[in-house]
Amino acid sequence: MRPLRPRSRSTQRMRRLLIANAVLAALLLVHIADHALRQPAEEQLGAAASLPGLLGTVAVFVSLAVVALRRPWARALAGAVGVLTALGFAAVHLAPRWSMFSDPYADRALDAGSWIGMLVSLAAGVVLALMARTARSGGAPRRRGLPAD
Image 1 (tube, rainbow, N blue to C red):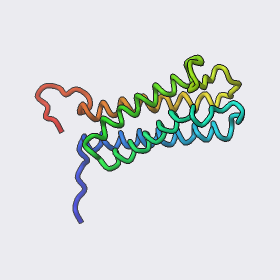
Image 2 (cartoon, rainbow, N blue to C red):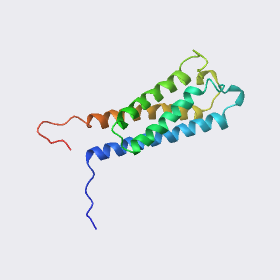
Image 3 (cartoon, one colour):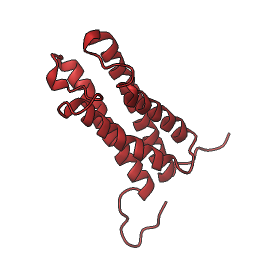
Image 4 (tube, one colour):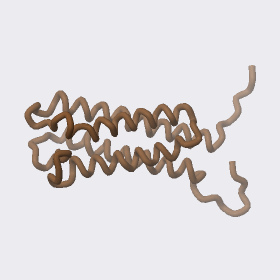
């Protein structure tokens, strides 16, 4: 039996990136369930207007697979997906009505659960983007004279 080697910093950063991506994916499923099960059907966006949300969800799951497979471009994809997810939530749910894609929560009688789920999902997009940046940049700045991992 081989002794276990400590994980490299790079491996640890990629593992954290994978966890952040998986958390965002799970939160998106909760958000979708909230729309489908807890919010009135007559207040939902139509199929065409829901397309950005659907494409965003697909992008998060593609990013999750790419990060899990440790592709060389996984960090860049995860970072872009995180930023776009956060911006998408802000544009669709926080901004006032601006287009057919708008679903401003302030205009609807939603409970705290819907608001919390949406805001936590937005924050998870930001966290994913920051984790991708940290993974890509090699983590916190090194002190002089200390070797890289």
